[in-house]
Length: 226
Image (cartoon, rainbow, N blue to C red; front, side, top):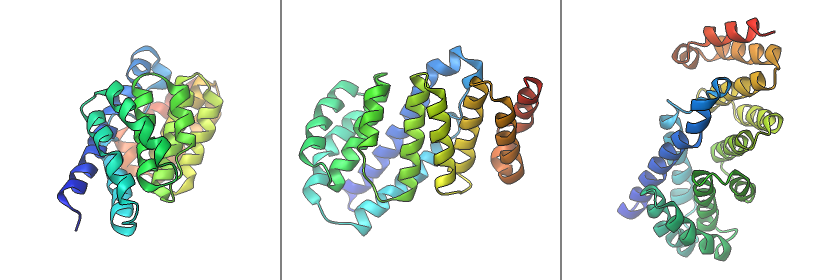
């Protein structure tokens, strides 16, 4: 059984990730119709991934207790949207516990805080330094790096990373989400045939996601732009 403190910690990570996910693309969603990424509706997906990550970290790998405790204050600040305070708290933790479980989690949370500040270059650099063995977290890390590249206007890099995230561990949750984002970026790059193929793949293989996103309208849009 998880202690009450660790269980609360897991809940906080899930809440933080869901809230920031909605914020990261808010401006993009408002200003660029081609880049209406699948931000809304994936909160539950992120929550599941984070819970799985926490399970692996806190039950399967109960070592490095000091490093786990060290990032807890920074995480709570992040959940409260105290972004600057969270960054100040987390940066020394990342430096001190680099390579340990708590240090890697702290760096992951820190990267999200940089994204919340709009510093996507720094966020991407932080994400590159996160070293986790968990497959699902690795997928999500790639997805966040793709988000950063898109925000920086590097759409080809974003497309490649979204496709890599989609293919790393095919499943009903992350795969269609990142295929959808890849298709939207492909449209931005005027790669309408590739976008059509990606939307069609979602329709053929991921029915629940397809229905939720009314995927036919995206297929029609991409085809009409060829």
